[in-house]
Amino acid sequence: MPESSQPEVPQPRRDSSEFGPSASWDALRRRADLLRCVRSFFDDRGFLEVETPLLSADVVVDRHLDPLSVILFDDPRDPETGPRRWLQTSPEFGMKRLLAAGAQAIYQITRAFRGGEVGALHNPEFTLVEWYRVGDDYQAGMDLLAELACATLRTTRVERLTYRQAFLNRVQLDPHVAPVADLIRLARQLDPHVPDYPASDRDSWLNFLLATAIEPQLGFERPTILYDYPASQAALALVRHDDPPVAERFELYVRGVELANGYHELVDPKSLRQRNSTQNELRAADGRPRLPESSRLLDAMEAGLPPCSGVALGFDRLVMVAAGANRLSEVMAFTSERA
Amino acid sequence: MSTYKTSDFRKGIKVQIDGEPFVMTEMNFVKPGKGNALYKCRLKNLIRGTTLERVYKGGDSLESADVEEVEAQFLYKQLETFVFMNNETYDQYELKADQVDDSWKWIKEGTVCSILLYNGNPVSMDPPPHVHLKVEYCEPGARGDTATNVTKSVKLETGAEVLVPLFINQGDLVRIDTRTGEYQERVKV
Image (cartoon, rainbow over all chains, first blue to last red; front, side, top):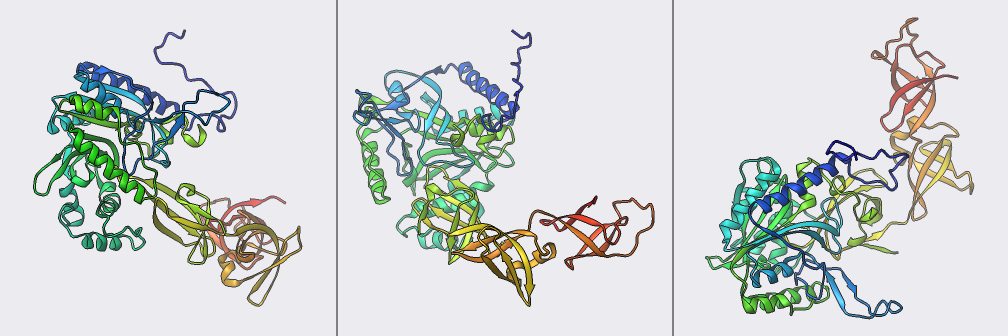
């Protein structure tokens, strides 16, 4: 064994551009350092590290998340026959079942899978850090995320900005009340070739404006938490019945890149049933297959999911911004096209 | 005609937009929050070299462009028409001066160029990345002047004018980078 604690970097004997990693050894070491940093962050705060299945009978029903699946065959000669298992788009369901069963503060560093997501900032297989703490309200959820951002990104302050204020600042428009015609007019002004979403699809227009005019500017001076999303974009977050109602959902941005998504968690199974069915209707309208709506998470919520906040953070992206890189391939050994 | 779905979008695919061929030079998959996916593409017009930025949503598609690059040598220029010949098939291709654009500066009889065929018709050409051309005329330089940071303008055998170091003489062969149009070195004969 070499005496130094730094693992030796293997020297390639011949040109490794065909089979070698796309990330530099420096970046891969940075990755390992950050993995340790994240673990000790949660260990120091008394979180229990857990592992839940990658393959599950249950899956998040979301209009814009396309889970990959595999068949658990009985007979290897007939590999297409057997129950379907979903590769987790996040460990959310498994972890919430643990919370309903008595866990207090848990975290997990795991792989997640999302179909159709390939690009500089997307890889169909990626690493998520996900955590939940019972008793954390909305503010506490954001506070913990900000602490983690400071611990990993060598910064001391995290800015907070409501979804509404971000729109007012950048495009002088209130996203919660502006008529959809105004959203469309502005989107076309920004890009005459904006996709032709139906006028009834308000969220897609908001989404386009967010992606085009707002996101690319977020988190440059310091990490920024965007919060209070439109209620229609609540996903699994609680909706606060203000006027207008907003979802208690928050996202962390650094240098225009979304790093994390958090919720003051929805605990009411009736609402989840309702949302699952709405999301499936939207999926069907988009031409996507419906996903199973019943799940053991619903059973757990019937039994009682304690009030909590939870966050999922894209670890690869965290390494990317920490390393000053612009593409995931600079911080992942092998992205999907070379996996 | 086949089509590319958004899931097929990637750098390098050749597509048709408003009847013209484009190559996708950049494709950014964007998915804000948990919203719907956007495909932000940068496309280069294969005929005119201009670029275009377009955003597509999941489920959109683009028609593929029937484009092919072939190698052909430059034969001659007649009035405003440049004539090339495919050395394998002996097919001849004609391009107008505006299709050849500035590239006339770097081609002489026999130069093997890359011709872009769109739906079977020649639409543009690229000269080789580097060419060797003879200096047809220049003012004589001072003997022993080997400075490379001082330049003078000379006329090449194709009629193009380029900046070269002072030590270059009439009759010298010079290597030119055709992408920048810059002198690179004197070629020893």
